[in-house]
Image 1 (cartoon, rainbow, N blue to C red):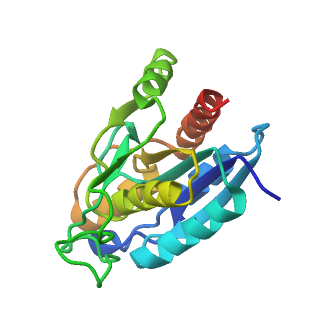
Image 2 (cartoon, one colour):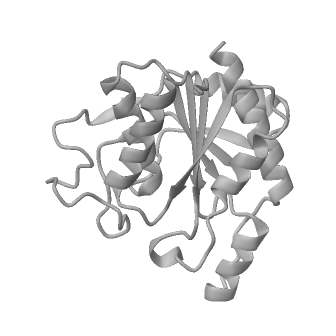
Image 3 (cartoon, helix red, strand yellow):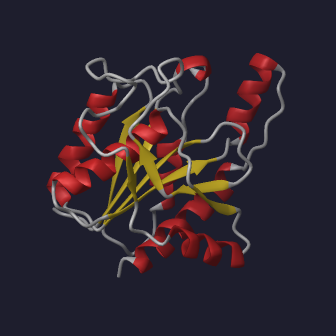
Length: 215
């Protein structure tokens, strides 16, 4: 059965130097959809997968559902706010993004594709509304050079290739308390965190409000 909204989130363990930490992004976003009267399909991504594996999974789900809205979620290390990304770059950092493709040159995710893709969602307006509701959400134009950027760039590239008109964003989540404690135990570094219940509530409102803009 086709659904209008795809909500994807990273699960399993984080990758690279943070591979000792759980990635709770899928758990947050999937629980956030509970009780929403919207046609939503949740998809779990894996931080340790190669870019092509993540790309292929997203492409299959986008072909299956032809969604109007796609929200992908992952962790923003050290963030105290939720960040809604405006787009993605055709680039990665080979030193930190271990899932990068091997068959491209110049640290590009996809050869012969656009340098940058931008979402059609009014991210600034969405964030302004959320802040008026006292939600700690900000707009961002830099999704990084790791898996999070690769996911939004890949989704926007698929969107164009399939001729879809989905609104797409990446939701960068702060640490949960569990993640912050795990980092402290490993490095003695104190980092901001937002409790799981608040993350679920804020994410639910983000999905609900963003869906309204697609109506």
